[in-house]
Amino acid sequence: AQSVTQLDSQVPVFEEAPVELRCNYSSSVSVYLFWYVQYPNQGLQLLLKYLSGSTLVKGINGFEAEFNKSQTSFHLRKPSVHISDTAEYFCAVSPISNFGNEKLTFGTGTRLTIIP
Amino acid sequence: DTAVSQTPKYLVTQMGNDKSIKCEQNLGHDTMYWYKQDSKKFLKIMFSYNNKELIINETVPNRFSPKSPDKAHLNLHINSLELGDSAVYFCASGRRAYEQYFGPGTRLTVT
Image (cartoon, rainbow over all chains, first blue to last red; front, side, top):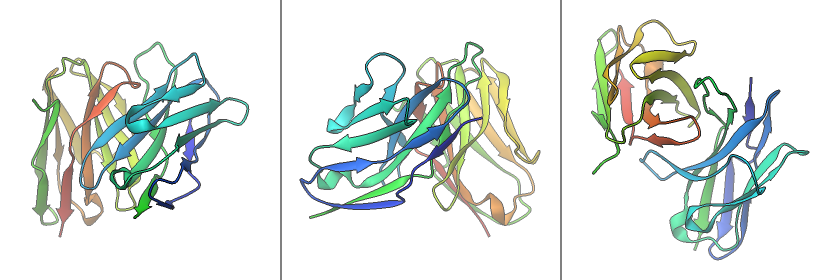
């Protein structure tokens, strides 16, 4: 089984400041890693994903994340945030499987609030 | 064109009623999912269907029954609604778990 921990439930950041949202996971098998964003009253949108290869992954809206296998982390970063980045951010993992029965396990989310 | 659509967007009903939520995707994916997001924003998978076959069935009360008439549709029927069923329900579709597209959600309120 997999589990995901997002230690920060809320992160307030001033506009144009950098931000890091933390994500740690636990799994007995290899996993894929994801960050999703949920804007108010909307569904989830994929920000970025790590499947294999380079541990630094770039996503949409200027976000990037780095996979650290030894620390079982997948922290999300943005060098300069905008008001429009205000949203809930979810880290998720999925076990690597050839049987088509993978499922996403989500963290509890981090609410990013941008302060003008 | 909306990739994954759900109806209705809002659903308010009384305890004990039976209700359905519909989901349709036009992405040509074989796999569809239902997720529940509770009041604390926690998201948990309920079911997944691959090509109309049930693949994942988490520990969900049997009052919840998914139905997939074809690959493009996955409906969720809920019998005897309870207060604890109040949540936002998301449908998603994808070729694999690592490429899921979510619908806008259905906010269910049971009174």
